[in-house]
Image (cartoon, rainbow over all chains, first blue to last red; front, side):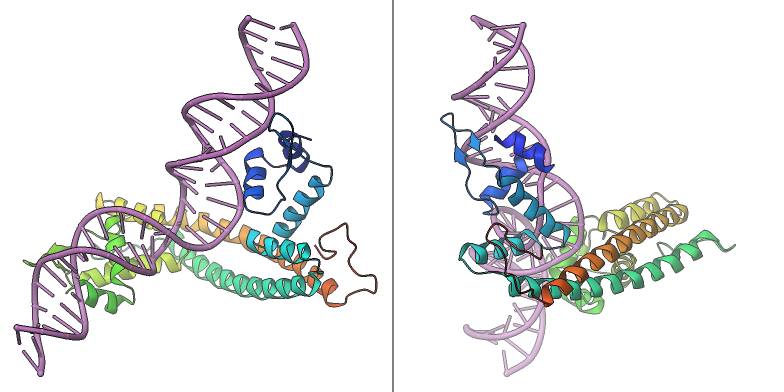
Length: 129
Length: 129
DNA sequence: CTTGACCTTCCATTGTACTGGAAGGTTCAT
DNA sequence: ATGAACCTTCCAGTACAATGGAAGGTCAAG
């Protein structure tokens, strides 16, 4: 399986796959005589794992950590559990922040949508911000 | 007012203020004979405007746009209203996405917190992801 | 034999908002 | 006069996850 086929099979690009290899998220691929990368079938699963990790909000760095633990023959379960818990906390904080921001923007937007008779004064940039 | 004082007054750093000037978010400061920047009082307000814009979730690029419109003698109100509306839409989308992600992660985290007797199989990296 | 699709490496760049550090000039108090 | 604290410019780098492009090699079809 060449890199273009793997890219197609996994819904990504050849650029990205080479980037993943360079970033040690994928093991260095076998090579054909021509120098072309030659992937085994399970490469699809490996890329899918990366994608699932990303879908779970993990960074490539965190995914790399899991892979590394696994490489060392250990089961990364408890580490993964920790990562997920941490991610959950971050998400909750981020969501709370965004909700507060949404409220602020909403107020500003309301205010800006009914312009008052006195137009913007010259000494400020914008009455609404 | 020198740059360090303005930084202190606005709760930022001299580095950032120079960066803002270079990014055309602040007008080039007057200079003392020594070459030091010499800010007028209203610089505090200008920096505060940038901070309020950021607090409203605008990027520096968007803040720069507003400033530019104002510079051209126009009142940027309707533009600002548009930006705020756009920002509101983005925020809603982002919040929805994060909530969905939170749910996913929550499920994964739950699963990972009660490990099942059959341990991770060798052919997958992690049962939980 | 040539054309076009595919592959290789290497280097640079994107966007966002700064931050770090070097090398040197200024100001003020002691 | 000397040391600390401040200022200047310029260059480079941070994190993140790719993406773009140049220059060249390979392979299958027509």
